[in-house]
Amino acid sequence: MTVWRMTRRCAALILGVALLCGGPAFAQRTDLAIGVRLEPPHLDPTAAAAAVIGEITYANLFEGLTRIDREGRVIPGLAESWEVSDDGKVYTFRLRQGVFFHDGSTFDARDAVFTLERAIAPDSINPQKALLEPIEAVEAVDAHTLSVRLKRPTAQLPFILGLPALVIVGHETAETNRAMPNGTGPFRFSRWHMGDRVDLVRNDRYWGEKPALSRVTFRVIGDPSAAYAALMAGNIDAYTNFPAPEHLPQFEADPRFKVVVGRTEGKTVLAQNNARKPLDDIRVRRAIAHAIDRKLLIDGALYGYGDPIGSHFAPQNAGYVDLTGRYPYDPEAARALLREAGAEGLRLKLALPPPSYARRSGEIIAERLRDVGIQVDIVPMEWAQWLTDVFRDKNYDLSIVSHVEPNDLDIYARDDYYFNYDSPEYKALYAELAAEQDEEKRLVLLKSLQQKLTDDAVNGFLFLLPKLGVWDARLQGFWENAPIPANDLTGVRWER
Image 1 (cartoon, rainbow, N blue to C red):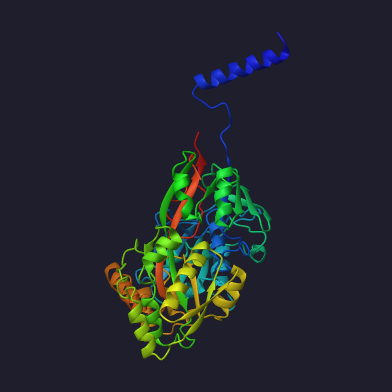
Image 2 (image 1 turned 90 degrees about the vertical axis):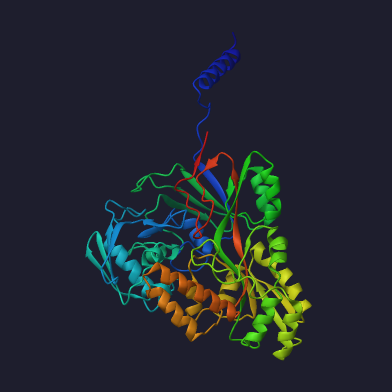
């Protein structure tokens, strides 16, 4: 018998034994390549509003005192438990012991104090700084006990502390997290290949249950056609926010893939600069609202996926009120309001960031606005330019963007937010909501806030961004919905 024949016979015997034993003849995979639409500006979720930072880092590299799970519930994170004083103004958090940052330093109450004091400091650039305004003082009672004293009761504090922007950072390494993130999560940062991918590896010193995945690569693939091609070719294994809904039927017909259509918290709006003439005239804003055809938008830009919204609130949440009928698509009503406002012959610029939902929706809205006499100049922007010109400098007329943070009605109560909406009545209502502990009263206030935004036609409220997930059918554990912008990979695994 030749050596070659002996080798073949041994291989066949080994394969037969494996099949008889019910196991595969190969090792189960522990690597994952996942697509994301955008490259993050950096990797510190406490220092920028870009949702893609949290999509990569939340629950993977960084963790908060609390954590938001796949159902949108608040569960323990680096705080294993907490108590609230009878007056609702003092929260005491019991912190986990035996937790280490990726650089080997120990996590304790000093890091929690540092993180929160840094977030509320006058020079803070934390995107959720406004939500922390009720905090009066933060104190390390001992190494594993944190006290947070509030100016007034704030029932949502545990939820707020579970958002991506409020993850805990080490006091020694906070300033280097943009390029070298150092968290406590189940994965460690490996390398960032600019313009291409971010690599993570399993943190074998993790305090909790170790993830099944040993290596994760986040691949930046923003072009819808390229995303489709990468999945079909096997260059990536998953795309949890797939940007090309027109291709979903092809994936659904292919047994290699699983397609899951869920919901996000992404309230997609036609943002309007309420301080810029003539958009400071409510009649003009209401005219624009009547020129929006939500059904056409959802069918044309999202291929039928997504839910219409009439205010800045997601339909799946308690307290939602359907206000989509407040401004029905009515071109004649829009023209009449423009005539009444003396705004005929209006010309506006529409700034569009890169996501396909924004670019596609922008083309449709521009056409509908032209039908009622508003000339629209479309200005495509990359994210860096959008964040500077629109979000920071408020130098725009109109824009389209999806606000993916949950329960973010607070943004309309901020003095410096890019909508430039200034309503004392709205601010008073929101202050009531923030302090209210009774759930039934909170629901009433939530409805009043939604109605106020719609009545004032602050923005054009378009649709809830769907979560279109496509991944290898052998993968299990991805979130079906997105209660926060995150790709929590702690429960993801390959099935044999």
